[in-house]
Image 1: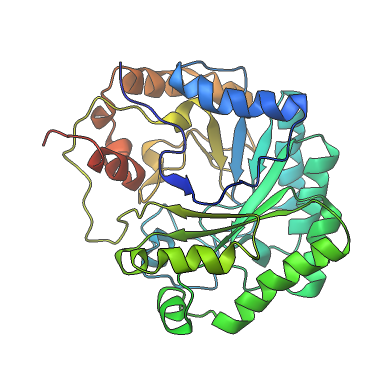
Image 2: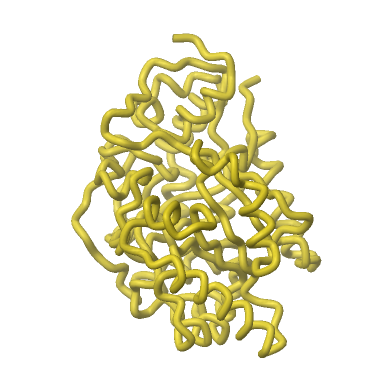
Length: 333
Protein backbone atom coordinates (compact mmCIF):
# COMPACT_ATOMS: atom_id res chain seq x y z
CA UNK A 1 0.00 0.00 0.00
CA UNK A 2 1.38 3.48 -0.85
CA UNK A 3 2.81 5.57 1.94
CA UNK A 4 0.55 8.49 2.73
CA UNK A 5 0.90 10.96 5.58
CA UNK A 6 -1.31 14.03 6.13
CA UNK A 7 0.58 17.24 7.03
CA UNK A 8 3.94 15.54 6.46
CA UNK A 9 5.61 18.85 5.52
CA UNK A 10 4.36 20.71 8.60
CA UNK A 11 6.08 20.62 11.99
CA UNK A 12 4.98 22.17 15.30
CA UNK A 13 7.78 22.90 17.78
CA UNK A 14 5.81 24.38 20.68
CA UNK A 15 3.94 22.44 23.32
CA UNK A 16 0.52 23.47 22.00
CA UNK A 17 -0.94 24.11 18.56
CA UNK A 18 -3.61 26.55 17.46
CA UNK A 19 -6.03 23.61 17.33
CA UNK A 20 -5.58 22.19 20.82
CA UNK A 21 -8.20 24.29 22.63
CA UNK A 22 -11.00 23.22 20.30
CA UNK A 23 -12.76 20.37 22.09
CA UNK A 24 -16.28 20.49 20.67
CA UNK A 25 -17.59 17.31 19.08
CA UNK A 26 -17.94 18.72 15.54
CA UNK A 27 -14.39 20.04 15.50
CA UNK A 28 -12.88 16.80 16.78
CA UNK A 29 -14.81 14.82 14.17
CA UNK A 30 -13.57 17.14 11.43
CA UNK A 31 -9.93 16.66 12.53
CA UNK A 32 -10.42 12.88 12.76
CA UNK A 33 -11.63 12.79 9.19
CA UNK A 34 -8.78 15.08 8.09
CA UNK A 35 -6.19 12.51 9.20
CA UNK A 36 -8.03 9.21 8.80
CA UNK A 37 -9.70 9.64 5.40
CA UNK A 38 -6.47 9.91 3.36
CA UNK A 39 -4.69 7.24 5.40
CA UNK A 40 -7.56 4.82 4.72
CA UNK A 41 -8.41 6.17 1.24
CA UNK A 42 -11.92 7.15 2.30
CA UNK A 43 -13.82 9.63 0.14
CA UNK A 44 -16.57 11.63 1.82
CA UNK A 45 -19.54 13.06 -0.01
CA UNK A 46 -17.95 16.52 -0.17
CA UNK A 47 -14.44 17.92 0.45
CA UNK A 48 -13.58 18.28 4.14
CA UNK A 49 -11.80 21.51 3.28
CA UNK A 50 -11.65 24.14 0.53
CA UNK A 51 -8.64 26.28 -0.29
CA UNK A 52 -10.29 29.43 -1.64
CA UNK A 53 -7.91 31.80 -3.38
CA UNK A 54 -9.22 35.26 -2.47
CA UNK A 55 -6.48 36.79 -4.65
CA UNK A 56 -3.30 35.74 -6.44
CA UNK A 57 -1.73 39.18 -5.95
CA UNK A 58 1.15 39.49 -3.49
CA UNK A 59 3.01 42.60 -2.35
CA UNK A 60 6.27 40.72 -1.65
CA UNK A 61 8.75 38.88 -3.86
CA UNK A 62 10.15 36.12 -1.68
CA UNK A 63 13.05 34.31 -3.42
CA UNK A 64 11.86 30.81 -2.41
CA UNK A 65 8.23 31.21 -3.55
CA UNK A 66 6.64 29.94 -6.76
CA UNK A 67 4.44 33.04 -6.86
CA UNK A 68 7.53 35.23 -7.26
CA UNK A 69 8.67 33.26 -10.29
CA UNK A 70 5.17 33.05 -11.77
CA UNK A 71 5.51 29.30 -12.27
CA UNK A 72 2.45 28.31 -10.24
CA UNK A 73 -0.42 28.39 -12.70
CA UNK A 74 -1.53 31.27 -14.97
CA UNK A 75 -0.84 34.79 -13.75
CA UNK A 76 -3.66 37.03 -14.77
CA UNK A 77 -4.08 39.02 -11.54
CA UNK A 78 -7.44 39.20 -9.86
CA UNK A 79 -9.66 39.25 -6.79
CA UNK A 80 -12.38 36.73 -5.96
CA UNK A 81 -15.82 38.30 -6.37
CA UNK A 82 -17.69 38.46 -3.08
CA UNK A 83 -20.92 37.11 -4.56
CA UNK A 84 -19.08 34.12 -6.02
CA UNK A 85 -17.42 33.51 -2.66
CA UNK A 86 -20.82 33.43 -0.97
CA UNK A 87 -22.07 30.96 -3.55
CA UNK A 88 -19.10 28.67 -2.87
CA UNK A 89 -19.66 28.87 0.88
CA UNK A 90 -23.40 28.23 0.47
CA UNK A 91 -22.76 25.01 -1.43
CA UNK A 92 -20.18 23.95 1.11
CA UNK A 93 -22.36 24.75 4.12
CA UNK A 94 -25.23 22.76 2.59
CA UNK A 95 -22.95 19.74 2.13
CA UNK A 96 -21.01 19.51 5.40
CA UNK A 97 -17.90 21.54 4.53
CA UNK A 98 -15.77 21.81 7.69
CA UNK A 99 -12.98 24.26 6.95
CA UNK A 100 -11.77 26.92 4.53
CA UNK A 101 -8.40 28.57 4.03
CA UNK A 102 -8.74 31.93 2.31
CA UNK A 103 -5.33 32.01 0.67
CA UNK A 104 -3.24 30.22 -1.91
CA UNK A 105 -0.85 32.15 -4.16
CA UNK A 106 -1.48 35.71 -2.96
CA UNK A 107 -1.74 37.89 0.14
CA UNK A 108 -5.35 37.64 1.40
CA UNK A 109 -5.26 40.93 3.32
CA UNK A 110 -5.05 42.70 -0.05
CA UNK A 111 -8.69 41.71 -0.63
CA UNK A 112 -10.95 44.55 0.57
CA UNK A 113 -13.72 42.10 1.56
CA UNK A 114 -11.61 39.58 3.49
CA UNK A 115 -13.26 40.27 6.87
CA UNK A 116 -16.74 40.10 5.32
CA UNK A 117 -15.82 36.77 3.72
CA UNK A 118 -14.75 35.35 7.08
CA UNK A 119 -17.93 36.63 8.75
CA UNK A 120 -20.14 35.10 6.05
CA UNK A 121 -18.43 31.69 6.27
CA UNK A 122 -18.73 31.79 10.06
CA UNK A 123 -22.42 32.74 9.79
CA UNK A 124 -22.99 29.73 7.51
CA UNK A 125 -21.50 27.41 10.12
CA UNK A 126 -18.03 26.63 8.75
CA UNK A 127 -16.11 25.19 11.72
CA UNK A 128 -12.54 26.29 10.96
CA UNK A 129 -11.70 29.47 9.03
CA UNK A 130 -8.13 30.67 8.56
CA UNK A 131 -5.55 31.98 6.12
CA UNK A 132 -1.82 32.46 5.66
CA UNK A 133 -0.47 36.02 5.54
CA UNK A 134 2.85 37.86 5.50
CA UNK A 135 1.47 40.21 8.15
CA UNK A 136 2.41 43.46 6.43
CA UNK A 137 -1.19 44.78 6.39
CA UNK A 138 -2.15 43.86 9.96
CA UNK A 139 -2.88 47.36 11.20
CA UNK A 140 -5.15 48.03 14.18
CA UNK A 141 -8.27 48.55 12.06
CA UNK A 142 -7.76 45.32 10.12
CA UNK A 143 -7.01 43.39 13.31
CA UNK A 144 -10.29 44.48 14.90
CA UNK A 145 -12.21 43.67 11.72
CA UNK A 146 -10.76 40.15 11.66
CA UNK A 147 -11.49 39.59 15.34
CA UNK A 148 -15.06 40.82 14.86
CA UNK A 149 -15.49 38.53 11.84
CA UNK A 150 -14.84 35.42 13.95
CA UNK A 151 -11.60 34.31 12.25
CA UNK A 152 -10.52 31.11 14.00
CA UNK A 153 -6.80 31.20 13.34
CA UNK A 154 -4.15 33.01 11.38
CA UNK A 155 -0.77 31.74 10.15
CA UNK A 156 1.88 34.43 9.75
CA UNK A 157 4.98 33.62 7.72
CA UNK A 158 8.17 35.10 9.11
CA UNK A 159 11.73 34.08 8.18
CA UNK A 160 14.44 34.66 10.80
CA UNK A 161 14.66 36.94 13.84
CA UNK A 162 17.06 39.56 12.51
CA UNK A 163 16.26 42.43 10.18
CA UNK A 164 19.01 41.45 7.77
CA UNK A 165 17.85 37.84 7.33
CA UNK A 166 14.13 38.63 7.35
CA UNK A 167 14.29 41.38 4.71
CA UNK A 168 16.52 39.25 2.50
CA UNK A 169 13.87 36.54 2.40
CA UNK A 170 10.87 38.91 2.51
CA UNK A 171 11.90 41.73 0.15
CA UNK A 172 9.36 44.53 0.29
CA UNK A 173 8.56 44.02 4.00
CA UNK A 174 9.89 46.02 6.96
CA UNK A 175 11.11 43.87 9.85
CA UNK A 176 10.17 46.19 12.74
CA UNK A 177 6.77 47.00 11.25
CA UNK A 178 5.71 43.36 10.85
CA UNK A 179 6.97 42.37 14.31
CA UNK A 180 4.94 45.27 15.74
CA UNK A 181 1.87 44.16 13.77
CA UNK A 182 2.06 40.65 15.20
CA UNK A 183 2.54 41.90 18.75
CA UNK A 184 -0.39 44.28 18.26
CA UNK A 185 -2.60 41.42 17.08
CA UNK A 186 -1.85 39.48 20.27
CA UNK A 187 -2.33 42.56 22.47
CA UNK A 188 -5.67 43.56 20.97
CA UNK A 189 -7.03 40.01 21.05
CA UNK A 190 -6.02 39.57 24.69
CA UNK A 191 -7.26 43.02 25.67
CA UNK A 192 -10.65 42.10 24.24
CA UNK A 193 -10.49 38.87 26.25
CA UNK A 194 -11.20 36.68 23.23
CA UNK A 195 -9.74 33.28 22.33
CA UNK A 196 -9.59 33.98 18.59
CA UNK A 197 -7.90 34.22 16.24
CA UNK A 198 -5.25 31.79 17.40
CA UNK A 199 -1.83 32.94 16.13
CA UNK A 200 0.62 30.63 14.44
CA UNK A 201 4.08 31.85 13.43
CA UNK A 202 5.66 29.72 10.74
CA UNK A 203 8.78 29.74 8.62
CA UNK A 204 10.02 27.85 5.62
CA UNK A 205 13.03 26.13 7.16
CA UNK A 206 15.66 27.28 4.69
CA UNK A 207 19.24 26.03 5.27
CA UNK A 208 20.45 29.38 6.62
CA UNK A 209 17.71 29.42 9.28
CA UNK A 210 18.41 25.99 10.78
CA UNK A 211 21.33 27.15 12.93
CA UNK A 212 19.33 29.91 14.65
CA UNK A 213 16.04 28.06 14.80
CA UNK A 214 16.12 27.48 18.58
CA UNK A 215 16.52 31.23 19.04
CA UNK A 216 13.66 31.78 16.56
CA UNK A 217 11.36 29.57 18.63
CA UNK A 218 12.36 31.32 21.85
CA UNK A 219 11.60 34.73 20.37
CA UNK A 220 8.17 33.88 18.93
CA UNK A 221 6.73 31.51 21.54
CA UNK A 222 6.28 34.49 23.86
CA UNK A 223 4.02 36.15 21.29
CA UNK A 224 2.31 33.40 19.30
CA UNK A 225 0.12 30.48 20.34
CA UNK A 226 2.15 28.14 18.14
CA UNK A 227 5.53 28.21 16.40
CA UNK A 228 6.11 25.88 13.48
CA UNK A 229 8.11 25.31 10.34
CA UNK A 230 7.48 24.00 6.86
CA UNK A 231 9.85 21.88 4.82
CA UNK A 232 11.27 23.92 1.94
CA UNK A 233 9.93 23.12 -1.51
CA UNK A 234 12.11 23.72 -4.57
CA UNK A 235 10.04 26.01 -6.77
CA UNK A 236 12.37 28.15 -8.88
CA UNK A 237 12.19 27.81 -12.69
CA UNK A 238 15.40 25.76 -12.68
CA UNK A 239 13.94 23.10 -10.37
CA UNK A 240 12.82 20.04 -12.31
CA UNK A 241 10.72 17.44 -10.54
CA UNK A 242 10.22 14.78 -13.18
CA UNK A 243 11.62 11.29 -12.90
CA UNK A 244 10.88 10.23 -9.33
CA UNK A 245 8.93 7.02 -8.75
CA UNK A 246 7.81 5.90 -5.29
CA UNK A 247 5.08 3.92 -3.60
CA UNK A 248 3.52 7.16 -2.37
CA UNK A 249 0.10 8.84 -2.47
CA UNK A 250 -0.87 12.48 -1.91
CA UNK A 251 -3.32 13.10 0.97
CA UNK A 252 -4.84 16.17 -0.70
CA UNK A 253 -7.07 14.14 -3.00
CA UNK A 254 -8.99 12.75 -0.03
CA UNK A 255 -9.18 15.98 1.98
CA UNK A 256 -9.61 19.09 -0.11
CA UNK A 257 -10.25 20.95 -3.35
CA UNK A 258 -9.08 24.35 -4.56
CA UNK A 259 -11.10 27.23 -5.99
CA UNK A 260 -9.01 29.92 -7.68
CA UNK A 261 -9.98 33.61 -7.65
CA UNK A 262 -11.57 33.30 -11.12
CA UNK A 263 -13.65 30.25 -10.12
CA UNK A 264 -11.38 27.56 -11.59
CA UNK A 265 -11.71 24.27 -9.69
CA UNK A 266 -8.56 22.21 -9.03
CA UNK A 267 -8.46 18.78 -7.36
CA UNK A 268 -5.47 19.76 -5.21
CA UNK A 269 -2.97 22.56 -4.55
CA UNK A 270 -0.80 21.77 -7.63
CA UNK A 271 2.25 23.28 -5.92
CA UNK A 272 4.69 24.82 -8.37
CA UNK A 273 2.88 23.45 -11.44
CA UNK A 274 2.86 26.11 -14.15
CA UNK A 275 0.08 24.56 -16.25
CA UNK A 276 -3.16 24.22 -14.28
CA UNK A 277 -5.00 22.94 -17.35
CA UNK A 278 -3.34 19.56 -16.73
CA UNK A 279 -5.84 18.98 -13.91
CA UNK A 280 -8.37 21.82 -14.08
CA UNK A 281 -11.90 20.50 -13.56
CA UNK A 282 -13.85 23.47 -14.93
CA UNK A 283 -15.29 26.53 -13.26
CA UNK A 284 -17.48 26.82 -10.18
CA UNK A 285 -19.56 29.43 -12.02
CA UNK A 286 -20.94 26.63 -14.20
CA UNK A 287 -20.31 23.45 -12.17
CA UNK A 288 -20.96 22.29 -8.62
CA UNK A 289 -18.07 21.47 -6.31
CA UNK A 290 -19.86 18.31 -5.19
CA UNK A 291 -20.25 17.13 -8.78
CA UNK A 292 -16.53 17.57 -9.43
CA UNK A 293 -15.51 15.97 -6.10
CA UNK A 294 -17.53 12.87 -6.94
CA UNK A 295 -16.69 12.95 -10.65
CA UNK A 296 -14.90 10.36 -12.79
CA UNK A 297 -11.80 12.48 -13.35
CA UNK A 298 -10.97 12.98 -9.67
CA UNK A 299 -11.82 9.32 -9.01
CA UNK A 300 -9.21 8.43 -11.65
CA UNK A 301 -6.59 10.64 -9.98
CA UNK A 302 -7.28 9.06 -6.60
CA UNK A 303 -7.08 5.55 -8.01
CA UNK A 304 -3.71 6.24 -9.68
CA UNK A 305 -2.37 7.56 -6.37
CA UNK A 306 -3.92 4.70 -4.39
CA UNK A 307 -1.97 2.29 -6.58
CA UNK A 308 1.28 4.18 -5.90
CA UNK A 309 1.57 5.40 -9.50
CA UNK A 310 1.42 9.18 -9.10
CA UNK A 311 4.30 9.51 -11.57
CA UNK A 312 1.85 8.59 -14.33
CA UNK A 313 0.06 11.92 -13.91
CA UNK A 314 2.02 14.72 -15.60
CA UNK A 315 0.79 17.40 -13.19
CA UNK A 316 1.83 15.30 -10.19
CA UNK A 317 5.24 14.65 -11.73
CA UNK A 318 5.74 18.42 -11.96
CA UNK A 319 4.49 19.08 -8.40
CA UNK A 320 7.00 20.54 -5.92
CA UNK A 321 5.09 19.08 -2.95
CA UNK A 322 5.35 15.57 -4.37
CA UNK A 323 9.03 16.10 -5.18
CA UNK A 324 9.70 17.25 -1.64
CA UNK A 325 7.94 14.25 -0.11
CA UNK A 326 9.67 11.81 -2.44
CA UNK A 327 13.05 13.18 -1.37
CA UNK A 328 12.26 11.88 2.13
CA UNK A 329 11.81 8.36 0.72
CA UNK A 330 14.12 6.06 -1.15
CA UNK A 331 12.99 6.83 -4.68
CA UNK A 332 13.77 5.26 -8.01
CA UNK A 333 15.03 7.41 -10.86
